Amino acid sequence: MNNIPTVMILFGGSGDLAHRKIYPALFNLYRRNVIHDNFAVIGTARRPWSHEYLREQVAQAVHESWEEVDEAQLTEFASHFYYQSHDVTNVEHYVTLKQLAQELDERYECGGNRIFYMAMAPSFFGTIAEHIADQHLTGTGFNRLVVEKPFGTDLASAEVLNQQIRNSFAEDQVFRIDHYLGKEMVQNILPLRFGNSLFKRIWNADAVKNVQVTLAERLGVEARGDYYNNSGALRDMVQNHIMQIITLLAMPEPKDLSDKAIHAAKEDLLASLVIPDEKAVSENIIRGQYLGTETTFEYVKEPNVAEDSKTETYVAGRLEFSKGPLAGVPVYFRTGKEMREKKTRVDVVFKDEAGLYGDKAKTNVLTIEIDPVNQVYFRLNGKIVAGGDLRLERFRYRYSEDEQAEVPDGYERLIHDVFVNDSTNFTKWEELKQYWRFVDAVEAAWQKQNAAGEKPVKYRPYGMGPDTSKILADPEDGWIYK
Ligand code: BG6
Image (cartoon, rainbow, N blue to C red):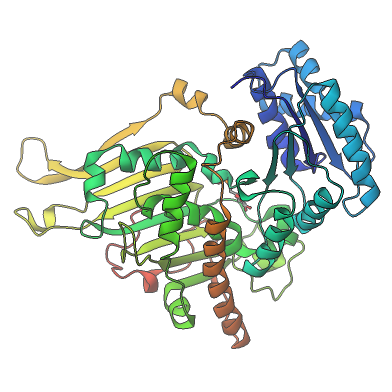
């Protein structure tokens, strides 16, 4: 689809996310003609910027992200940006915003289409949503709302926020961003599962021994202590990214590839997510906190983190579903800051069969690497050269450098999907609700543990985190990615 007429109102126009991700993505969509003559973006934030200053910022952001830029094209693109200084709690400001949106709508012939994008501190999402409703900011064409994470801090707050949003937007107009759903290899999970009869036939509890999801990060919390200390690894990475990946791995086959069918299959699965009680949390979930090194801070010494903070910078656990193709199969997950290296991957571990080759035949594993390299490999046994013994081999495919260069940034892909109204790769309310139920149960158990004086386990930075053997039913095999 080309040149989709839209006025976008971006809350958080002076922010880091807009600069690093949204402006460069919009520029590429402009180059690709998804938006062109009939669009305007109103950037809002508290700072007193001018239109001109915002345009300079947009141009700078584009330069920082893209090497080859046609300057005339960039100037033309940036001329569609307008700045409105905005205090989200001030009702008057929404009136001004509405007038500007209407003016721009007429000037650029946008047909009353609006995209509202919440890219700022989440504590304001609810207020903005309310004022969009009470000041009638929505247009006469299509209206869509893009919301960044975190969507609430628990189920109760997410429900309140959702209600506030639903005053102006129906569920199918809400695009809750999970940037992992924009990643190439995350989008490859369904094609791998349902495009190959080989995997389709063995993707079940008879053949799969366990599933392992690892989201390891090398970086610490850096300057985000304020946010992170109230969040922790569970809310920051498990509630959204890890849960979405697991959902794609465990959901039943959708009826077709429409966004409705895919979300229906996800919902089906998630209704059977086993919510752990206190005992299960203490047996199946481990939380950790990183120590310092000579050159890096221990977590509790990071800026804006309390000395006695019990926030986890690492979490590993085991969960399962009671229905779906992998019903009863253990799903292991882990994520942490200051781990050995950046690595995002999934390992699907198949059951061993006693056979002619005994122990010499090793476990088959399908690995999907999401970051830093887009690749898929299948571990299997073959014979050694000129001998009878076995050795492990890999069937592998990865993208060529040229293909790799073509992979769009996750944000560009997701913002594109908002323009074309494709909600496949966004989090629906029913999914989010189940994710929060799981996270709330874990948090509640941890609160009790805290009250009893228990703390996250300290771990040495730049390794693989705390000892996780207690959650692994089969510590001998353990994690495939060690
Ligand atoms: C974000 C988290 O959602 O994802 C960050 O808030 C984390 O803490 C980031 O670093 C990781 O994303 P990516 O794409 O670098 O793996």
